[in-house]
Length: 285
Image (cartoon, rainbow, N blue to C red; front, side, top):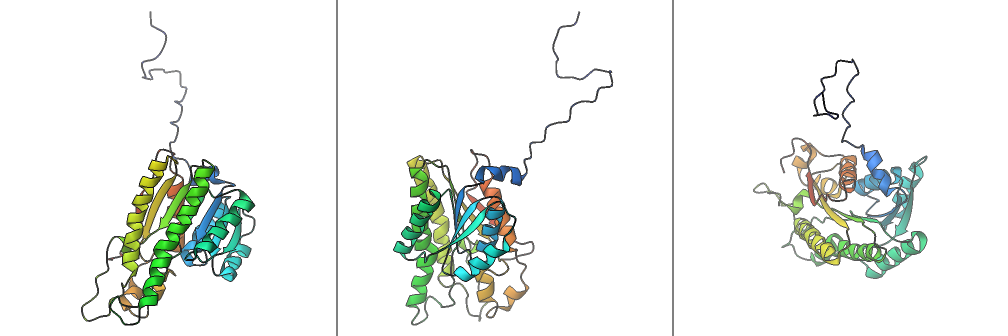
């Protein structure tokens, strides 16, 4: 007499097909449902990368507040988005000015209740050498935008998330130059200046923020995404005239970076992408 139950084998010859295995892969569109109706702040949305990120978040149903000094460019992006689930707002803000940042996040809180996601994308690069005369303003501009502005926005976003007990996400758009300084060809003008130093700082700041979020018990995630060269970004456009190599180097598309953001923000609750480096095939930076 056989016992009831099964030992896991399928010895049945009744012709009934076995049930197909359940797929463990969940489409990103499905995973993005948790962010529908949530509020994302994207800095530097008037640029190529920031615009692509903002567009994808809006398409996924998020309320995107673009912090930018260039309302005209953000408005152009906004009117191009039709028949989408979310919406795009332009909030004029100079992220290097503390009062601007406080006012912007205050407006978002009054309008939408607070912030659920922050994408620190705004950044600048200058062509001056570190040893060049009369370069003081350029040095400050790089550090104020790429480091101080990022920290100011992060501070206000974390304040909003913590006050509402939101398990949000902070994305820092870093750079391959936050991990490696480009080697100049002997006899040619170096292109680095203060930019790699500011991006190395973003690498360190991301880890510091992660530790602080753990200490505060927020449940918020933080991710650094470091692209190589990207079509239309500040590194590619500012270096083209000074370095012919940049013209021939393979480049990512802004949409590739946006896809990396979607990947990072759709991981399971227990998974955090801390550092993600993406490079175009064939790049040799």
